[in-house]
Structure formats: C-alpha cells, structure tokens
Image (tube, rainbow, N blue to C red):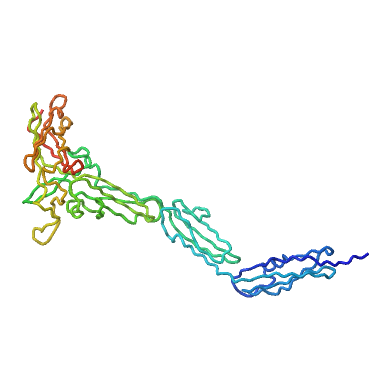
Length: 423
C-alpha cells in the first residue's frame, strides 16, 4: 500500500536583520554577513529527510530594505513559502575624540579618560605609566606620567587616539630662610625677636638694630614629574609683597601695619598640578632701648630695688607720616619714622602688668611691687630684692627689663642696664 504525502515541509526563515555599511555598492548574497544570514533558513519534513530550501535574493541595495522569499519543497512537490527582510543601512562615520583630560595636562588627583565615539562596534583602552602597563582604566590614580591610547573599531576599520598627562599629588617644598622664628635664643629679648633701636638725629627718628630684615625663600618641586613650580607668592601680615623684599619700616608703613609687634610671613609655591607648598614664620619686632634708659638704684643694699625707666617718644609730633620731602625738597620718599597709629608714644602706653625685671646674674625675675609715672616718658618701679637675689642674697649688677605696650598682647620692648656696683 502506498501512503501519499500531503503535508508540506515546515520552513524556518531567518529573523529580520539590519546591516550597517560605510557606503558603496549593493551587497550580494555572497557578502559574508548576507550569506550567513541566508544560511539560517532551514526546513524539515515528515516524509522527506532533506527538503530543498531556496531563496530569490539577488542584491541588497544600500539604504534600503529588501524582502527575501524563501521556498522549501519536499520530494512530493509540496511547497512552503516564507519571507524575511534584510535592511542595509548607511553606517555613521567612524569617529573618536578624547574629551578629557587635555593632552599634556598635569593634575593633582585621579583622572578618568573620557571620549566620544560614533560608528564603532568596540572600544578598547591601553595605558602606560612611566613606561609600564597601567591597565585598561579608564580611571587612573597613581602619581606618574601616563600615555593612554583609545582604539575604536568596526568590521574592517579601526581608529586610535592618544592622550598624555601627568598625575602629581606631591606639593612643592618651600624653605623660608629669612626671617626666622628663633633669631637669637640667647639674646636680650624674647626668643623670636628682632631688635630695633631708635635714635634721633637732627630732630628726626632713625631706626637701627636688626632692620632691614631680608626676606629670602626658595622652592623646588623635585618629585621627578613634569611641571615644576609655576608660581611663588609671598605675603607679610596677609598683604602681598615682593619675593625678595626687605622688611623695614617703610614697607610696613605702606601696608598700614605697625613696626613693633608680631609679624607673619607666608610663602606659597604652586606646581603645575595645582599642589600648594607653604612655609610660614611668625616673628616679633621688639624695641631695644639703650643702656641710658634703665637705671637700678639700691645695689648694693638690703631694701627694695628702685628702677627708673625712660622711654623715647616714638612719634614726630602728632603725625606719623609715611613719607616726607627729601633733603633737596624733590618730592616724597619713605623715611625711617615709626609710622603707625599703633606705635607707642611713650611711657604712658606701657602695660604695667607685663613688666618683668630680670637679674642676669641669678637668672631670676620679678614683677614690680609698685609703679609710679614720673612724667610722660618715665616710670619709677619698685621691686622686691629677695625675689631677684640668689642664695647668697646678691642680685648681681646687670639687669634686664622687659614689657609690652598697650596690653598683654602688645608689642614688646627690652631695656638693659644696671648699677655701678652690685652684690
């Protein structure tokens, strides 16, 4: 008995597909991507183990969709038909641009390499740091010089872009050579003091002692990375000054700052990555009186010591000008007058509670037990001998008086003197 085949084969057609091409002529069925797509068609049949599958594809124009009819026929001549569509699209041009960081950049933190890309099927990143593989990124954090290459690709085409940058998180080193915080630890003034003397010549005040104070600083950025120091700034009491300025009364006068008292110098160095190195020093300018300003009575003796302190008048009249006519009358020029409303004007400005008399022989010091003003420029002070004397009851002949103007935080002064004889 012969069984007649009445069931057509089952046909499976490929899924609809879009191919991107850069341009050119229509694709043929022999194009590798098209051939692979066409080959996905298959058929099965209950009676015929290998039904024949054909299609009517001839060409596939660019920027168009082509319908392909697939036909499956078994040995009994039964046919099944199916349709699939292949679109050939005009692909975007392959472009690649690194948008960050800028080539040659030097930064103080982690860097993420960013880019824009069109028309690529894959993007790869390769990087070196100081010539050694740095991994795929795209974020990098270690200090060093980087070379990063980004490659975009698609079938038959590649495009590469490279960026170079430096990560530097180490600030420059700043060394402030002058002024120093501890100028003379064994001197006659507080440890961090610069001494200023005042004399009067032909009716005008003249300053001497440690003035002018040189301002010297050096900075380097020897971390082995690109860049170096790109900016160096110096401030005195918060105001910018030249890097090699001389700290003197005329400069402080221009800044509106008093000469006596505490001053702060800050030097900052900035490297190419924006790291900031800083050095800071605070120092005092102390008024040093001459030996005629301090007299100690009662040495030798058994009773209290009487000290007479005479302070100079530190203003020229009621004004404190920053400039005056030069000797030829040719115009204004800075002079050496103590120029600030905050500068002391004499004994009336002394903060009595800050006074301390030091016996240099015994190393002991004491506050006055009594203070009396004798005119605008003179103070008469009384001290307990026992507080200053050594085990043998003697104070020695040389004394130093220190104190401050205005209040406990005001500018300091020091006077050294003594008696003709002492125990």
